[in-house]
Image 1 (tube, helix red, strand yellow):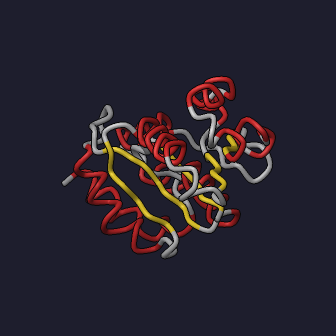
Image 2 (cartoon, one colour):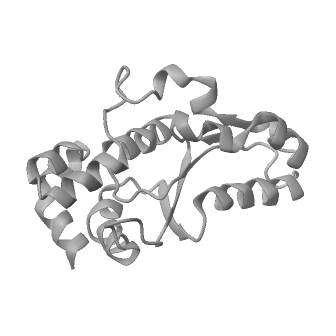
Length: 182
């Protein structure tokens, strides 16, 4: 089984995040998204969780599971540790990490090999191995960044905010903003 792991604060969830999730959906049998309810600048963690529950999760395929955690990166390390400690239970699993190229070094090969030797050969950091597919604005990868989306919210630029969303959320941009502001 190929398992996709997608960690991130995702405040707010935008087209760049969805690009990673979509790649994981296309390439994996099961996808786990780890995000957090911590506040980030102008985005309340609890408001973002309402957006996930009301708008995002209902539109994701059933093979995607969203979990709210304290640390998305820590959650991935917990999965690797559990797998490393129980290799016979997960010996046929391959783990693919989906993150931006800016975060690729959080999961350095040498660290994974040293810390999780039983799973290291079955762990792929896609942004590191296939960086050309994950550079912002290159190929199909959208030009979206959390900071830019938050700036559009702060400036009240609805059209810019909407443009940063993945296609399936664009029709719900007003609802998205209302949930973030409630």
